[in-house]
Length: 461
Image (tube, one colour):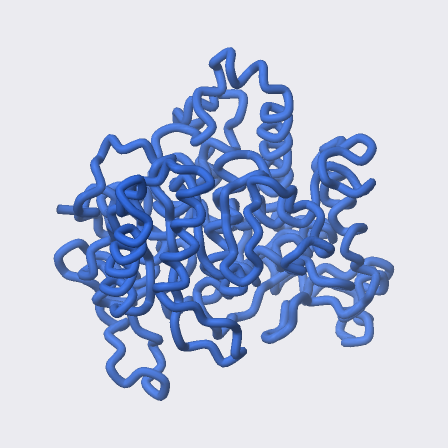
């Protein structure tokens, strides 16, 4: 049984000391050369999904080693702004993210975009708000640190002190909404307002310029063109965005232990299974006010068999869905297709995280969901909705392939973290809406790629 209460975790964190940022270099087989990556979410799986970086096979793969080193540099850049600054210094600038009232996936993505905007302005990102996905009965503060590592050593109090001491001109919205004027007036405080992609409105933030600025400051030399960059360098929005997401959801000890526990509870999925033989599938039904496409379990089953015909390696399907019906319909549809195709096509085994881990799921808003149990956490294993959803996300990331709808935040995050954990833009993440497998397409071509998904925005964050 998994039991690690929040008080115990907080006591362990306090013992590390105020200045400690957790850079202990956990053994990921990434070696001590990559201390910033080694504290990321990949530590959950014991070693890097790309293998032992000290092995000749990996060391001789120059393309892979270069991307690992570049990811390390980007994480070091983030840590410098978040943990190495003097929070009391007059020249320290703060970017404070206000509460985001939408879903968990949206909260993570907006946080990542805001972090990138802060970085390009050389600002320290502060995320003090509470999230409804953390049950107060588990963690009273309901802040991000209830499940993840500290975003910054600086506090909201530090940010407000900087706001009081900045020039009077910085109190004008005409100054603070424009990036160029903000810098020109030597302002030191900005808030990202709700329902806006970023704190600044100015077109000074262009798509490619912001990526180039971030990479240059992180000391990442892309060279001319590179892989799939269209003359704009090796890396596009996927690289910088996945690194921001990687940082935002670095698991704390509680989250690491819980995820490993959940993995052991997936019935019929052997503990020693080769995860390249597992296809992760996310089926989301309903709850979509944007009227985006919905796909049936039969649609998913058909696409799964298309991948089996092309790759022939998947023995298991790890299903995640907000629809109880999908857990019954997908196995049935897979069996029907298997019988039609004949003996050469065995039915992959559908497995899933046990339903009791999601007994606390709810919107937290009585007007939306009068039956929400979010205020409670599971007394047996001590988890809440945040922990259950993130554990499932981490486990799906470790699968050999993924099938979902990338117009939903959850599907996007699996794809981003698959890229982050493998240090490549070439991952088997298939979009039901677009029909594009990224194993044969470099995603750094955004926003001109098939999905037209640009998390950085067209003219500003």
